[in-house]
Image (cartoon, rainbow, N blue to C red; front, side, top):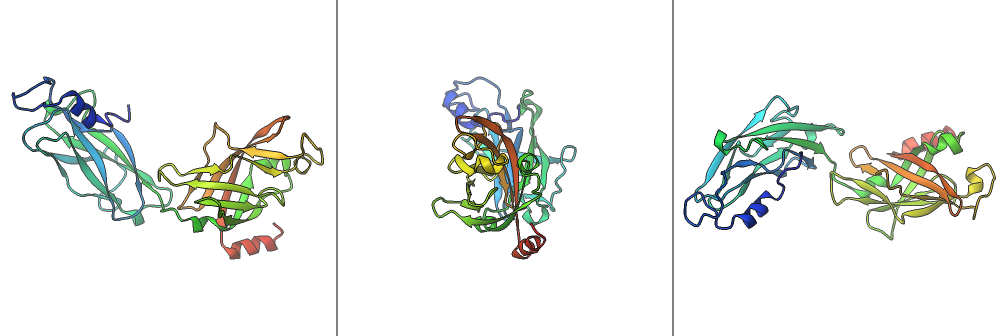
Length: 297
């Protein structure tokens, strides 16, 4: 069980109103435990200044402050304190009348490689009688480097590679693209002439959760070419090759490495599905674009 007692504070507060460590007005007679709210959590590191909370919860309210030290467990950690992260303090205090507190951690953004996802294991040093055997007193914190999103990094010149090439565009190794901002949607771009000349594709970058950089087609169904283009001159149905966002695969973007991985399901209306293919688009400089173009791409 990786995500434990996320809302423990609220649940306990609702269940044990007026609970205390003293004997007055006691309505909850269970033991007084303290623990990390999650045994595993991921944190997006987007700069070197922001501290992030690692919640600690208790099962009872006390009428005095409770202070516990926090230990870094080497066995299970591959992040290095001082290089990859700092703790604001090695102690936490659950104040009188409260059920929660937090360890605060800051990542060193500039010390991470673009693909880094490293972890630190923390242990709450509480007396044995305060440790619930079911949950223990450890947590694993995964620090993930996430570069701040900038739509301007996803416009300009790009290179497309696609598994579609191997089946239906066998003479194509890569395809050079020009990418523009979509004036009709926030964080949207238009890939000009994506697979076939005259047919553009629109996508949208979902930036709400830095740990889930989702790429969406918008609209979710679009025309990418003609069936004659794809099937050696054969016309099927209305002669329009359509694509839609598959339910079984998640498309995403990477703001640090400046690329997208996009899945598309190709189909012909009233005829059937052609297949689901993966596209990788990598943004390049104008100089690289012009060089590749001069090489016949």
